[in-house]
Image 1 (tube, rainbow, N blue to C red):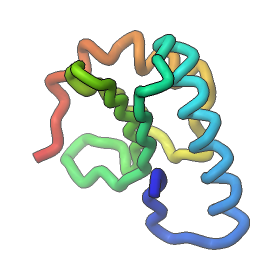
Image 2: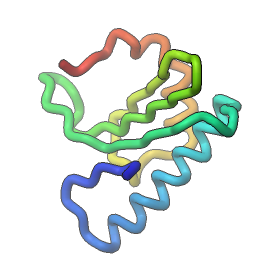
Image 3: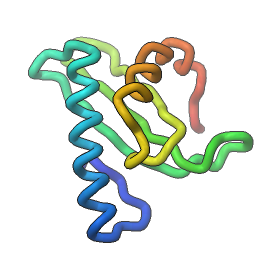
Image 4: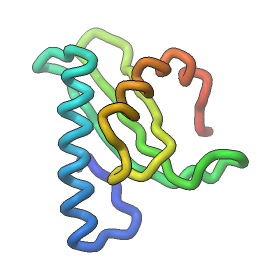
Length: 100
């Protein structure tokens, strides 16, 4: 399953699933990913001090490559193309942002 839902309800699950598909498509487009790449999108709570309460994590796995990821401090439904584009442009700065 590609999407982690914390409190599912039918209407929001359908919207979230659609947004998840959008984020995967946008990521493939922005990074010019090959067909063999896997894109995983998840939404989770962030409990670190100073971290916004929700974040979307987008991870990319390609054969024979290190994985890449970006984080967007937002709910899944509120992520738009520009948020994702900015997150991937800043992804190099986010390498040091880890959650232990």
